[in-house]
Length: 291
Image 1: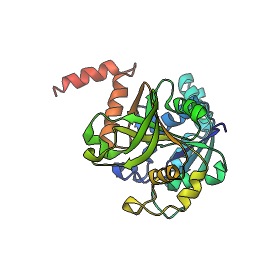
Image 2 (image 1 turned 90 degrees about the horizontal axis):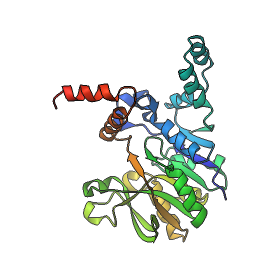
Image 3 (image 1 turned 135 degrees about the horizontal axis):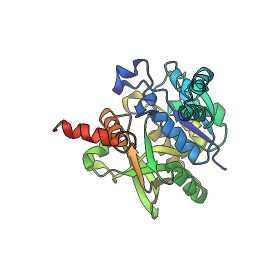
Image 4 (image 1 turned 120 degrees about the vertical axis):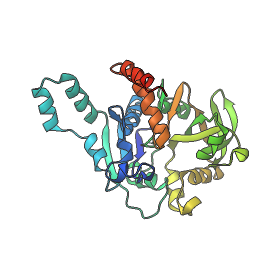
């Protein structure tokens, strides 16, 4: 079946960014002048998917407001002759068809917001992309994954090489066998292994194409690490049942882990230093600090 829908889990507390995220969703943290989640939405749309389900919580209303129309703001910008800003604001609300679901499940874990999308997804395969991180790639990461899905079917997970061994314990690492070029068949995902125990340096993370069978697995999954329900555990169960799962190493992509304080700061600096409006001034300022 064609992938028509994408799910963005965005219901987490964002505790790593407290107190900033006490009243502001971590997905709305800005990369210069655009929130992280907008980069994720734009990737989905650029990959040909227009129906986007965002899983939120009671404290995430700002996400809904961001992708909604603001008639008062639009009128103000038109009145002031701010054509560029008016175009940017109006375009945001026209990016996709948005559906918002409030996560109400009492269980914790990153598989729970995926399960919340079940009523809207029904019996279709679907994509999942986290709302607090993104990969910059041409063609887009999800577009590359969709091509793999068309050829191999099964479930597809985006994969990124982790060059630093010390960083392996931050990700789910694939035990896999090569299929062709940048495609691997995944035998198992080891969640946050010690560097010496990692089966490879290929992190399976960030974006997924999943079958509807994943919902039943999540519903019956027992709590894993830290007493939470993990998507990795659900995918490993999918593999045990004989469902093929493939890793797609993203070509020409760079991963931005904007859910991490230091990586978020690095992302902001990188984007700022390449911004045409003020990169030169920023470089001069940094040089003046004599670091």
